[in-house]
Image (cartoon, rainbow, N blue to C red; front, side, top):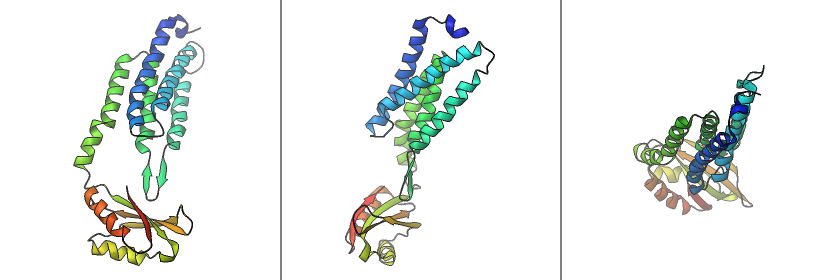
Length: 221
């Protein structure tokens, strides 16, 4: 029935456990950051990709194209990753989580094929990118990342001119404003994008905006 039939069950179990272990390692880092796709999600994605890959080995012994199952994994992971991406105000969140889901599925496929060297290297690179490289990114590129100020204001007191004037007095200019319905009754949510604003200055600016009449709350992201 194909190559899979000749594999001992111990080998198949080892590959599944290897894939699950890789997903667990990456999932622990995501879980510590309180992301939706955490420990269990990464483990299941990796183990599931491994299992589908093992099934594709059976197809390789028949007249069908063995690559069809692998292509199906990639398509399915694309939909799963898209569900992790959300837009909050003017900021897009979840891209790193979606990329992690996509990458860990590749690690699971490698485990299903028995490429344990690729599994170890891929898992190590992913963990490095999600931990150490994030620390490096914050210090090297923090000046070029825009800051987002999510301001909740009462609808009666909403005045973009007042907010712009407050920002101008503090020496800043918003690159973009976005207004949406607030979570509370009679409130509006205003998202202001300010380029080249370090975190420390953003927090000071948030304190300044919080003192403006009609402002309910200010959050920096």
